[in-house]
Length: 328
Ligand SMILES: Cc1cc2nc3c(=O)[nH]c(=O)nc-3n(C[C@H](O)[C@H](O)[C@H](O)COP(=O)(O)OP(=O)(O)OC[C@H]3O[C@@H](n4cnc5c(N)ncnc54)[C@H](O)[C@@H]3O)c2cc1C
Image (cartoon, rainbow, N blue to C red; front, side):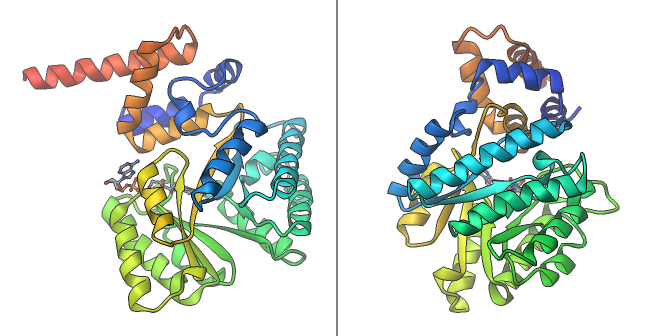
């Protein structure tokens, strides 16, 4: 099994997910998850705001199959919106429709979203609908369109690996859009599979939205893309107010600070909450170099948890495979 697939497999494991919830942030997750509680998260937002960095706050949540879980998530997000307003934080919301009940019932999800968007609208706070896998793509756009009839403080994400992303970006150009390469494993009939095809389409979409769209969030850790965008906006006289760079909390921190210091709008994606496990495993799937986060933690602390064992055995497996390779 490929390394990426292994971590995606771990991220989807419900038993490990609930085990992780009982143990708080472990295995290095604290370096990429802002906190478990809202209080811890507010502290992280304030620190970033001091560096002229705004935040998009994501209440982590996976495996929402019960209405009560979706309502719990909705209430948590409402609480975050209230805190952003009360404490005058430079922050907005990112959410996943599945966490608000999309896999349970469309209308139920829409009502939950509506409550969130309405409160955010009252306080002039933006809400981003994160994009998940292909199975949820069209229903998520439908939710966006329906809520946009009443509210203008919403936007979403375009994933460059989908063949239809060009069509989507043209259709939704009047929205504030975050453009990403795409994080899920998608089949060949709907998505580009090679890095070069995805990267090429990614640049094409960013350029299109910078020239024709409302506001563009370029969400990537790829310095080549960032450098390309810097040259492109200069050449086309695109003002800083029309775009921002985004990166995930804990990744390429120096580059995040530097871009903000250079005067670009910068926004850090700040995940928080007890449901950190799946998010953390997907980050490992994306960039196995992050394994150093895991190994340091696993070997320094007492980790008798299922997650610790699963990850340790995997790490040892990888290391022994590597040393075998060296011998050959
Ligand atoms: C703010 C934000 C929001 C996102 N929202 C969504 C979403 O809603 N839906 C979705 O499907 N996906 C989302 N993603 C994930 C996205 O789709 C990609 O899977 C993820 O960002 C990895 O691609 P990349 O563009 O960062 O670069 P990659 O293609 O992973 O990396 C390109 C190159 O950049 C360099 N690099 C990358 N990371 C690092 C690092 N940590 N340190 C040093 N060098 C590095 C390396 O040279 C690497 O080869 C989001 C990503 C971000 C940053």
